[in-house]
Length: 395
Image (tube, rainbow, N blue to C red; front, side):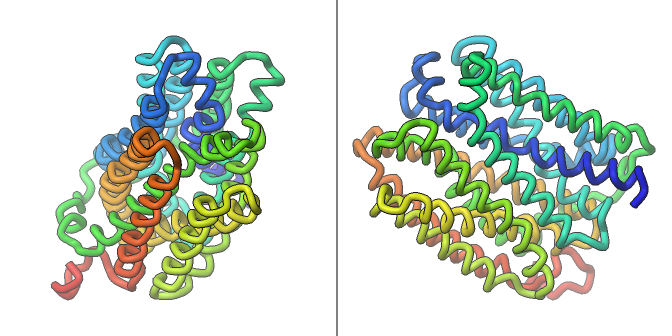
């Protein structure tokens, strides 16, 4: 492997690692942030909600940026903006907290949409493998940040504000590694095809969008509130953070293996169904017996959610024929999907306030998983996204 290939792979991996710490790093510190800034539980949940809303709202600009500047330069800009947002959100009160979070999430939105296209552009013969690598690094970043923010806070004495700024360092390092790709002649920039029309007319797009949104909703609910659920059940803050880290760590291996296996088959339906059933089992464990074998529920939940996320992104990468179509499908599925997902953490916070416990929110999550099961059945079936000879019933 040449030095250029090593640099490409290293930059790709580290860029993927930066796609979740800005979000996952909030949850273990949420009680401290709420006390410091003066937020209610709904206001605390709104931090994640604001970020997930931005993931939905700003993803559609990515194909425009990619056509103008190329995917590589778009990714580099995203890394720099993430670092800026992470630094900003610890510098003031609630407005600055939300503003910095929104800025970081906007950059993540652009990178989320860019990455499947980058896989198709730089690794066209290894889409299954590199999708697995990409997704596993995303969840590894979430696991590392949720596990390390509290120990890092204790070790440095900086508090949540300083820890937020420290999370910007990996983003800056990733930008440095990706710089050689960005300074090259941009691929995919200019007056290329505009596949949005065909993508929007395809039924496949909306099946994939529903799967992406519902699996993201059930994931971000747990990302935002799982440590708080266990804090209220009697665990210490660091132990609650470790449980969240465990479920995220399990997702690393799952999300690496599942795309390689599922990508070998024309239909991903069996894998999508199995992943959803495991997520249901994890939710039921947290609802009915959270303190009995919490590590087991985290493992089951991690397998289910990691596989669901990886399969949604794999389907996005497999159905289109070229990077432009991948980016367009990714923009639609992730943008609309994350708008759906944004309702989750805020809804859970409101239901927690209204009901005084976690039973009603978790039962609501199970209902959402039922809808995810249906969406996965349609999204996982073999289909071609955009093709001139495509049967009209698949459009």
